[in-house]
Length: 165
Image 1 (cartoon, helix red, strand yellow):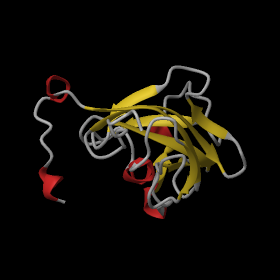
Image 2 (spheres, one colour):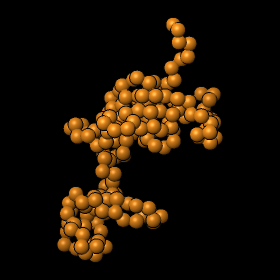
Image 3 (tube, one colour):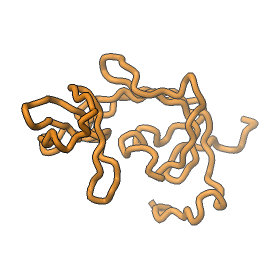
Image 4 (spheres, helix red, strand yellow):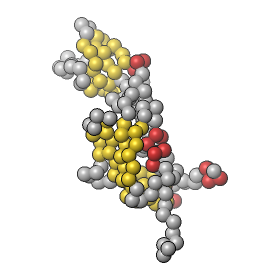
């Protein structure tokens, strides 16, 4: 019982360093840091989707966990309203259009709107603007390396309103 300091657990506003792997139910790996540098972020800063953050709450350094994140908690359900037919003349003539090709459009705010070509018709192209992982269950595997309180200097004003619980 030599160590009086309780080990920090992951909660809102904590700085977390971890390795993670995202994979599909068929085992295809989407992203992984296990062979690279671990990722560091602050809980609640928007780096992770809420479903992924929820899974991490209460874990501490040394913990390993794998869980399935359902579409509603992950990248959203597939929404047929996000599948559009786009006139072929909106595409660069040099572009070799084929199903599976990722194309990018500007949204009204001039942000990037990536979409995946689904189908080629005579004078239109069916483009799916759903996130490529929408509607998919995601396996989220983590190894927690370090959990620290955020220093005030790092986070600016990171006072949490939820101290009172």
